[in-house]
Amino acid sequence: MAKSGFRGSRPGGGGGGMNMGMIRQAQKMQEDLLKMQAELEEQTYTAASGGGVVRATVSGKRELVSLELDPGAVDPEDVEMLSDMIVAAVNEAIRLSDKAASDNMSKLTGGMGGLSGLNLGF
Image 1 (tube, rainbow, N blue to C red):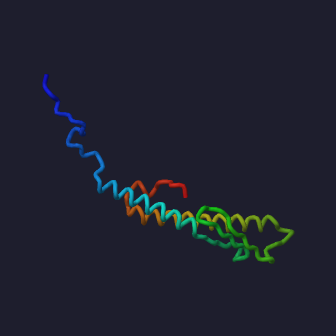
Image 2 (tube, one colour):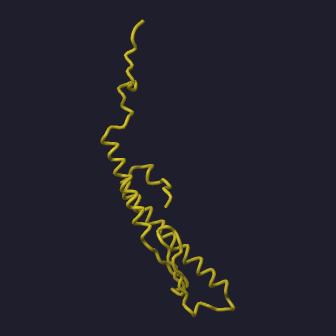
Image 3 (cartoon, rainbow, N blue to C red):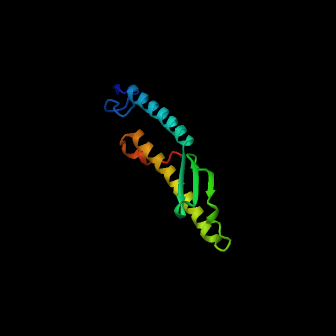
């Protein structure tokens, strides 16, 4: 019976495995990602609506941290308008937070195709 010559390596020279350089690069990217995520969580993003009469601030964790209302925006006869302005300001502040996270992810991945589209929980 002939020996196959297979010694636990991949057929074709084992080119599918990760070398130490790739592993180190992946570890560095993971460290950079965690650092970036912590920095983003520390940031706040503010948006206004109604010409500035409603201002909403959210954290990088996508939590509303403050809501400022100009007293002139409070019209007991038109609470619906005030509600709409609040929703608009909060949604815009969240969008700004998401854009900052996405922009930073693009910088981190440096055009590595599929990675920039990952949902990494922030």
